[in-house]
Amino acid sequence: MAYASTLIAASTPASALAPSTLPTMDLLADPQPPSRRGWRQRWYEVIFGHESRAGRNFDVLLILAILASVAVVIADSVAELHARHGQLFYRLEWIFTLLFTAEYLVRLAIVADRLRYARSFFGVIDLLAVLPTWLSLLFPGAQYLLVIRVLRILRVFRILKLLRYVDESRLLVGAMVRSWRKIFIFLLAIVSLVIVFGAVMFLVEGPANGFTSIPQSMYWAVVTVATVGFGDIVPGTALGKLITSVLVLIGYGIIAVPTGIYTAELATSLRQDRDRRRCDGCGLRGHETDALHCRGCGLQLGTQP
Image 1 (cartoon, helix red, strand yellow):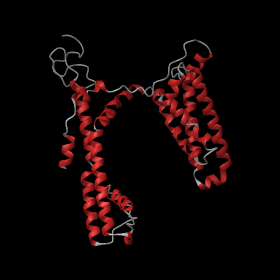
Image 2 (cartoon, helix red, strand yellow; image 1 turned 90 degrees about the horizontal axis):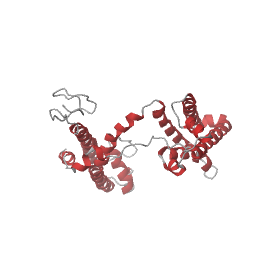
Image 3 (cartoon, rainbow, N blue to C red; image 1 turned 45 degrees about the vertical axis):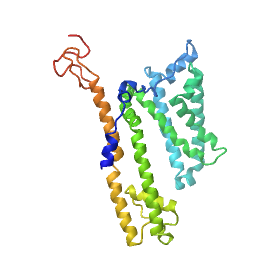
Image 4 (cartoon, rainbow, N blue to C red; image 1 turned 180 degrees about the vertical axis):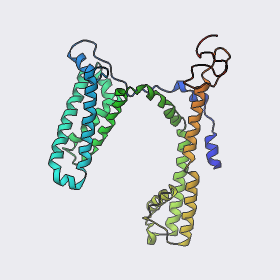
């Protein structure tokens, strides 16, 4: 575990650790409304609005339609149900696709900046929610990709007024971004390990025991180091079993390394979030992010003594 400790203890620039430098997550933000009153403004309040009764009803109906369409796609993939109700599933699939296509076009028509909405997170998801069915006219089977519609359920964050909690995820994303170099080095070491052990097992076991090529042996090494062990390829010689045992022990020893790296970066982010909060009265630092008063002198944080 010395390798893991070295990775975790690697230095990171202070500027990269500052939470204030992380971009604000606004993936779930609504597009800008039209500048003029009229039918576009009224429809915007219904489709993108969440305060009015009409807007809430539209959101609920949209979520129900999304769940129903995903259920149809899942049911259609079952051979028995497809044989019995294939035509019904096909019609329902096109009904949902036409409805979602019309909804997407209406959204494009009523927003102020169409290109910005089309390139936004939800704009891309809304487009991908209808493309598979149209693509199935040229590529049969593409309609099963319609399960991506379930991502549109993320709009429930706005319906349930949970959007203010989304910004907290910046700590998780920021820790992942800052630790990607260490994790990349770790994955590179794992790939090297897999290649070496795969080549050794190809020489030791050979095609007689299922190790027909180095790529096939590398597949066995990946399954073994991940401690999954499907059992479709197993060594038959004593030396091969010894090598397998060593690789399994190595896998148990290193499987927690990326978790340790990420946890260390996350702990650093939380600590720096606390360190940024300083009491104006006594100068004490290290307050929790949701603290209202200083834990030393009791003064309200953000006020002068």
